[in-house]
Image 1 (cartoon, rainbow, N blue to C red):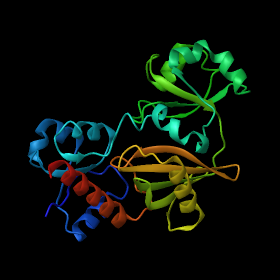
Image 2 (cartoon, rainbow, N blue to C red):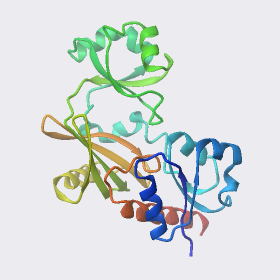
Image 3 (cartoon, rainbow, N blue to C red):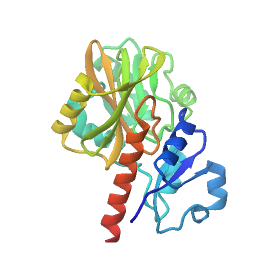
Image 4 (cartoon, rainbow, N blue to C red):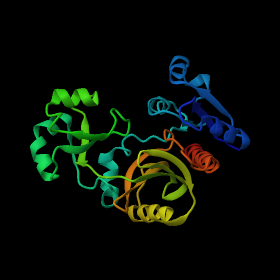
Length: 274
């Protein structure tokens, strides 16, 4: 009987040791690594290249794991987790449902047009199109950062990178849900204002909202992923999608995360090898 093996990047998430303890309690075989150790030693130092392996850790190491023949390796579909991909499906539910995609250089050239369209005095929300986090998303004032040199320096990136620009929006709460296809696995509150609060979600209106969104969209980026939900002006919205392999668990149920991950990994492995 095939059983999933786990490759865990050490000390990345707050509940690292608890995750390891949960793997041991369920009898899963795992190995721990670091980015530098993995790069220097190579994949075959951990598992044979035809093994069923599932990764948890950073985006950068996850990208390297995807270069191996391991199945599934990492749940990190870079193309489908780009905003420019999944916004096509989730548009009506998004917090940032009015937006432009353009390069950073074009953002500066079209600054006045964009600020007028958003009826903004200068502040806009900017995030990378890519889920690989080439810079940190946030609110930026284009009247202060009004040259490409200033904006590139602030974001520490280049002027050809594709970005999403939308109006600044107030957010009061944020939740994360781990999802298998279109079914919620487990969820957690993680932010109230600026305060980190990890609190598991079990059923109720939040899960109902996520189920409604997923049923309506009827599309998912890959078998396992995360969806972050937020509250803004007393309404719920989809904030973003993320990678199962590279997402923090907050107060989510680790047993359910691991069981769903292992089950999906084996399902994918057997579909390819049988």
